[in-house]
Length: 360
Image 1: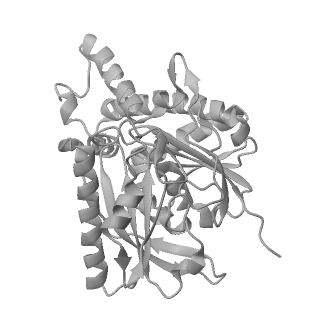
Image 2: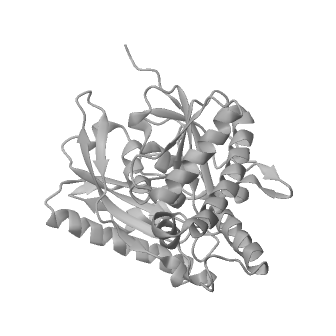
């Protein structure tokens, strides 16, 4: 079980920033990458994207055995999330019913998973759970979240379940703006951000604006570059080199849009992130493998490849991808003392937070 991570008071990264920090500008990270066990495996595997498709395909198999599958001969490989969205919107009653059946089965399992998380010490007192990740998007995600919320409330849960505000693909970039103190963005318009997922790497320019309270609240990342590395099966070295080239392209995009970039790059990455920028665990599914090697340090590679931005020394900070996605929601969670995020994608990412008390 991954529990609270130890942070050293020194600067092991050498760039003025500790990676994977628990004490952030708006929140304290109570825990992340929590790995609860269930039936010989990990609890999160019961409520990730693969689990949803298992529910859907099992239901279709049962209907096919009875020769009553309303989707007919439509091959599994041809069924996408968009296909399910279309069936919900325009399919006949039975076709939509198959999708609703998968939603019901998955929602029941997700509710059980959330109940287990809520029993953990680091999730005690959680008032709101934000749902992100690829499953969150569209009507399908809304129905999964809504049905799960109803199940939990019927069982007596008082925690609200809400979809993440930003598009999940954008949230993984926007959250990087909350990794550093707001003063570091003074006189700048944007920063560079990277989101490394289970199948894709996204790199974008995150534009930032300050709210009336002086808090960094309005941030967005339009048209990020996306590389579906799962199609290419690159080595670790090739993946890092491609990521760096994407960042250099993003610098050019910012220049073309006449945005003054802060000398900061935020990286969201699966796994437990050590203070020196190495990955302690949880990086086994990243491209090329062996990202957990003590000799592999992605932030250092990025800083060496892009030593300056706008004539100032580049600083790179990396944190867990669920933490970063959750941070995109942090400016809107001021009314919840304790809250959490679950990202439903290739895996089930998780993080729990407590808000810092406002200063008098």
